[in-house]
Length: 335
Ligand code: PAP
Image 1 (cartoon, protein in one colour):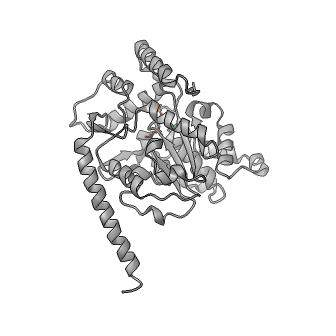
Image 2: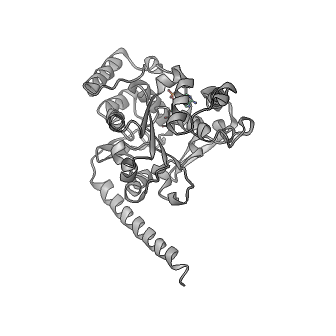
Image 3: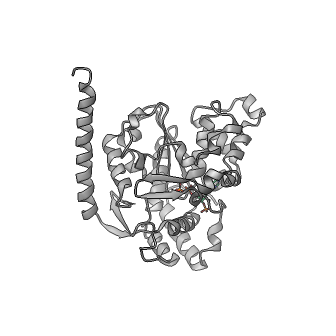
């Protein structure tokens, strides 16, 4: 009995935790403020941010209650549709560049989302303690809702990517309409836009999401790297170099001369990823409720596509909100 006692005990703790979180989940989803969602019909507002009342929300509760940061952890954080898929591919390829050949690289057969755990969902049915260090993890959660130990650890790193809100909205609208089940009434772009403008969007309000990480980055620049999708599109070599340095894996002069950065960029490029079979036909199942076709994560991959979809009035309205939200923060979105 002796040697197996610790694992039995931890199983009991585990069950108790799940029971507690399930109870909290059930209570919260019936009492929290709610509004309309695009993929699922309802979102609930938890501590200022909007979540779908499905297992991801349970994951967020578990993450806050249970997750213990390690000093070597790397968190890739983002609001949805800001460049997460690209950032995951670039970071995975950069961190593992001495482990894999480019000709047989895992990214040729694995969607970037499956190259690392999406903690918000993963934690509900996986043991994050069993992951080897350094753990490369991702989250869409707001900074204030990341685990306390992650925020407080001086050493674990956070890489955040943001994108201009007009492109985020358009990208999110098309993505969500692909995933919204036909049994739910359709949502027009105008209605979705109104929701986005009042802050109602998955993991949003978007501006508060960005500014939460921006403020944290001002306080701890050595802990948080803040990236802008548009700037990365304009000068990806510079940003991947910076990313590698920030993560403690700078490219050597030999690597630079051998064109390793360019190889990484080619492998992770929109054109390359969308040409791969896995990204045309595969699926990601972050949560048991929904499988997402890998092709859904790629649409145009362009800066400024929103001008092809938003009316001048919509652009003016969102620009005005952006100006008001950013006033006095010292932050500006990339163009
Ligand atoms: P997620 O939150 O669902 O993971 P995310 O990857 O953050 O989505 O954003 C998707 C956007 O990134 C899409 O933008 P679009 O709708 O304006 O086209 C997608 O096309 C773009 N994207 C995906 N992969 C890449 C890539 N390799 N390079 C550049 N952009 C990309």
